[in-house]
Image 1 (cartoon, helix red, strand yellow):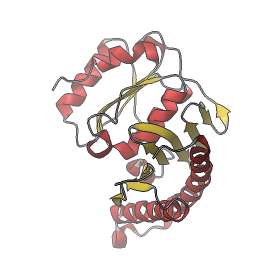
Image 2: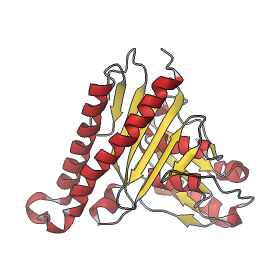
Image 3: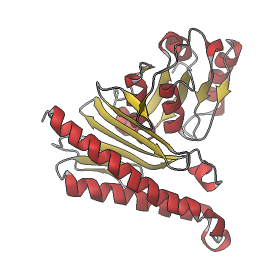
Image 4: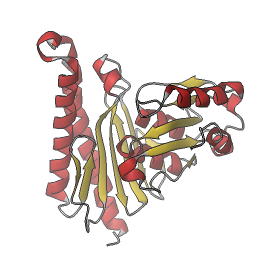
Amino acid sequence: MTLTDQEIQKRFDFGKELIVKAGELAMSYFNSLETLDIKSKGPQDFVSEADYNTEVLIKDAIKAKFPDDAFFGEETGPTGLAGANGIWVVDPIDGTQPFLMGMSSWCVSIAFISGEEMLIGLVYSPAGNQFFAAQKGRGATLNEKPIKARDAQTLNDGIVSVGYSNRTTPKELIQMMSGLLENGGMYHRNGSGALGICYVASGALIGYIEYHINSWDCLAALLLVSEAGGTVNDFIADNGLHLGGKIIAASPKVFAQLDSFFPTK
């Protein structure tokens, strides 16, 4: 089923309200970190509770409002994919380690896709007071103000964020880092893939690269980069929704060079 512009707009408006509510819930856990009894509960258990409860809030709200839409969350997985109008792809807390350490570089990420088309991208950082939003064909915003990717000509014109997870070997990461540094680039990492990609959309960074990232970490932010005039690889191709894959989000003129730093399989 092809959704009308009005139906997409309804989901966009709904998603913007929902992600703020989810951010408020996640923030309540974040604000209680100082009083958490680490010995009796453990930090990973706490984050799991925060992740799960935030995702359930989002999932239940979507089910009530759009029962024919599918859901794919980091914590609860995919539900209702067959015959759905579209899929909501959600990471309730992207940036688990910064969250645990009391740092502000974590966020809630919500994307909505139909087929292989990204239609809505929402990323909210309540601790950082940053709300990124994009709708296909209508541009991208940060806190309701339009944003644009930086017009970088070379890697000397800004900073590139390099993502890393246990799905990447140290050897693969070192090859990418070497390519970047040997060609005049500088790197940055804040622990949240979604926020790092959003900073490409806002022009704070000129690129984001990662050898393997999951779909819930990046789909919302990828639409933001595209709508802000940046260039991204076709992440959803080759079953990226379920399997994840490599990611490049960059200023158009440095995209190809960043792509060349990836190890060949």
